[in-house]
Image (cartoon, rainbow, N blue to C red):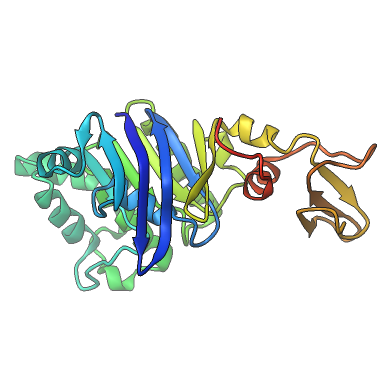
Length: 283
């Protein structure tokens, strides 16, 4: 499914959440990254048809989401995990996921039950499916939300911080599964974890202040920082950003590295360059 966002703006209480956002997302896995308050959740809500834009258009596989029939068509193809999933704590894992399967009109019942069990197993909760949700840890509850989003193998999967509260191994397995799913569907995830996301995704969108600062393959984002990264014995006042990466050295990102001390850029360096450089915009 192809997602086309054209000149979209959205404000809440006089504060701009998105400003003239234009982006086209094809199939595969897209990671949306950015600081807190950058507009990630608002963008994903627009794609999932739970928010309406003040200006601009959102089209998914040609369906205009401002039109009721277009929204319905998108929702029938959608699996969605919100940033803060509100779960019925008295229900068991199986009861809740089956409830969502009924809402998604997964019939007949035999197929629905098999699909519910499959999705619960996929997120590693097969042994806990008859436990009440209130007895699960935060990470397990997050996986319950992911299980309901996977029902029916949706053609469009939108996940808002699905890795929140997950342990590193569970997160790695989840990303590997999403990358595999994205071969036959469109998957959009938001995350605060930039370190290894480039291994799994096809493209990255960087948001800051409600505006797109970069969109493109992970390698292109990393290359934004080429020639802009260096190490120093102390923070460099000329750098945009410095952080201590060992007991004796600081890693710095700025307009250009001093002669002879440049370092190979990482995806994190490219991300910081996209946020800070006035020239870092989408290709």
